[in-house]
Image (cartoon, rainbow, N blue to C red):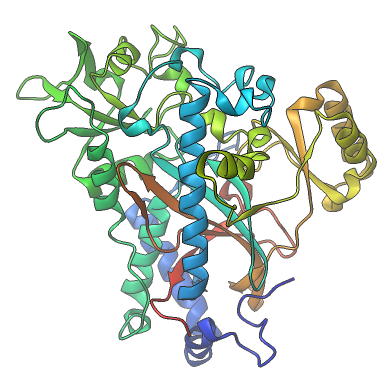
Length: 470
């Protein structure tokens, strides 16, 4: 296991020197007390996360760890180039598969994986979104296994969540420990809302002739990420709307206000494709706006991210992203994928079934850490039950080796201990590509656990990028 703070032969790695000094000067008792204080602040602010299927009150805090994760300037430059490259390739892929399908014709990606994918929307064929951008907010999940070994675990091209925690984690740390930021070279993250707004305005539809009106569309307060929806709307100075706040007339979208209807140009939607428009997709949807998809198709409004963008982040498609980079950009991939077995391939499936005890197996359409089998942590009975699921529908699964994820110092009941982490940076794609330094570091708080998802008991950390190499 690579310890991001203590992996140096000389002890503490250079990016963590200040953190190590701060931990020692503060002391464990004070850190524990400050953690309780931070939890109180989060609760007062109202940052909660709904976990569906739990008994009792589903609202709970995502645990916040006080010890920041730190990247040097050199490390971040490498990551940022790879993230931006990947976001450009994913958008090129989406444009292609909804138009000529050249990558399929070239035999690089099997047609069935694209055109029979449940996330592929035939209704999007031939539609030309502004700037040829389909995925405007791309969340790239990255894991680290060594000093210079960063791997992409998965892509999120629809409505990746978690950026509110990036901003609030930093706010809490600056409020509680201002001395950590005094005179130090930690790059700021508070420009994200302005950058998000600029990105959304850049993709306003052709029908928009004035300053674009941007709204954030939420399914409502019962959604697990509702806090983030309202937070981002507030930070951008945009209206937070639900379906009943909008209507379509003459091919345009309008928002009901106390001063009468107001034209809407760009919708940052945080609802799933199926629920966007009951006339185009699910007729029983009460979360969507009748006629919205027709208005989008005719260029009267821009929906961000575009319907159908999810085909690019399907776990079966993920395997081919390095080839997308070569095919569309003519570049060598900067960030590698995790080695992946396709259970839809008979030889791969045979290997997976014989090695379930040592692999991580995932549903290709799954998310949030649900529906996974972590082989080394599973029982024989669990492996046998999962094998039956794979045999019943092999194409619905992929498998990856159990990675020895890097670990960061984390405050636990037993003191400062290493815990496994991953990283989700948020890349904004409009006329320009923008990337806020750092991202959401998720941490597996249970000792030995590799599952960092908040829905599975994970927590979050502030993520630092240093302005200069140390």
